[in-house]
Image 1 (tube, rainbow, N blue to C red):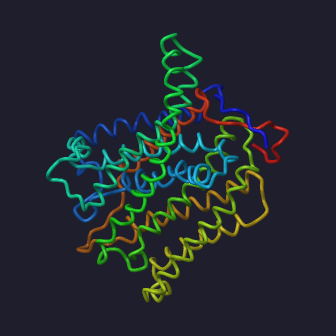
Image 2: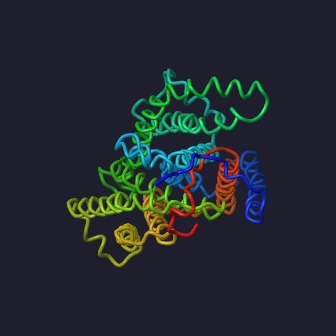
Image 3: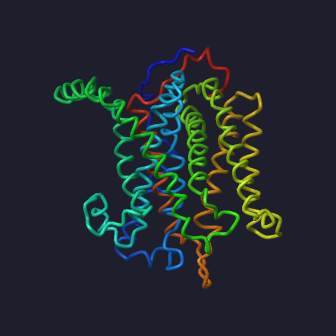
Length: 396
């Protein structure tokens, strides 16, 4: 199927929806200021038992998983050499760049001594613990966020090559071929780095054997987090592409998106197979038959993965079906990661955690800002590649 070249969507940015997001963000900025002025204790429900909260779990652990669409599409397009999926790469990279930027913001908000964050990139510090998974995650996320914006940069340079002052046009024309010359190395980093830190997000809990419920604690946590990273990434590509089309009045290429269905179903089934086999081999399957909330959550996760796989195996190829299938897979990966970091984690000594109003509002704020940035950028810069309307069978 022929695709149009990536181009700015254009149109009016301000709408009731974007104005509502701006209102949420405006209040949230005041809450963020209060967090930095008053400290974590006065604005969050975090404690010695739960030294992390939803700013890390949703914005970082889950947000970067959803932001792994760029990584997932790079595997398909550049490693598996399926070039016909290339129109999905730019929007996936943009979502990844915004997702990882939001994740970085979440890290800053979550840190008690955030002013010391500048020390992390100084890798020659003699006090560094080179066995630390957190150090690997911090360094990888910092570098990968830069890599993602470099991967999105051609869209910006293509725009400024034709717009703006003459000096900006000349600089953009000069930079584009140089960036193209090194892009293969940047893309290689864009495959290696997320594979490293997404698996390490699971490795962090290998030291919590006595605190993480046995249905979730396993030596293969890194593998399960890597699989959920792919599930969230591919699902995000499908969902975001359809939502972009509906929000911006473009036609979504349902045939191209439907080509990912078999891959997404395979990832979902692989997760369930590995998860159930692991629980059985570790002799923990009896816990899944208990009449308690943990068993319910365990089966809810697996049921969502299986439901997504069943829907994906169907023949439906309209945008409504794809949105339902991708949404189910997103929810499955979301729930699994939330359970590992919060719900199935018990530090003992009576510690409990439920996010404060400030934590919830800040999360809504950074999400609102991410959506606003995405809508602005796809309207202004050549990110989305459309398809001629007569060739699309599904509705936008």
